Image (cartoon, rainbow, N blue to C red):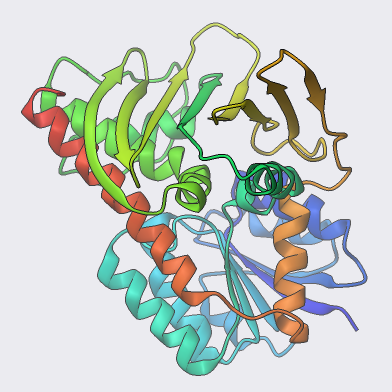
Length: 350
């Protein structure tokens, strides 16, 4: 029998990401309950699968049909919702990134899951994409040392991110408002530093676990700046490897680009991911050798969204072991990069 899934949250991630993904895995999961935070959106989403709907988490966690919980609430609520799900005795948890908004909350959430032996997956779907496995296999099989890593994002405007990063440094994230996006004043170092921290935690968090795969020890931030109208450019060293990350939300609609590149002494390995919320199969891996010979791996029909849910199914079935320490290490790595970038911008950027 498929596991009954309760979805905490009724926003774009549930509507465009998890519901379509779970509909492709009927042998493993079925949506039985959707809960919102009072918006009323859960009823329409639940109707798509014949599930129950409610507001808040109490009714969902008390539902005997809910065996697995997907936590798609705002990031500042993730740790508390994980703890509540553990207390309710669920069998497994998929939590959208980030695991928590602070190291202490993350450690408490991991300790609770570990103590109750509840499998936990954090939805950084790029790390689960089959293409990333192909890319790292090529790198490790070649035996060549990775010399540098570059992560490049060019995305269309996203009202939710404008609202998220447009608050004052000490203010809470705001709900996205109607009308044109409000652009933050990046000439103010405190605002620029906060914008970059929140973009690292919200966007770079997709790919920092991949960087950690290859360069696990964060050492120091070399440069950090906010980019107008909304973005960042970072350079840091990790495990002796220079890493460059840039992200820019463009006001006029260039095609989206989401790419991770690794250079060795002989090869340039490039992984190009589809935009978020797009179900278009895996990323594409290409390799250019030192002799200018290029090759491209065939794309997989499955994407990282399917793969992360299948990974949770394997944990529930006992055919894989929960990697609690890796989940926590990813969070600490993201936190280290975000904090170092924030602090360096306040100091002048270099």
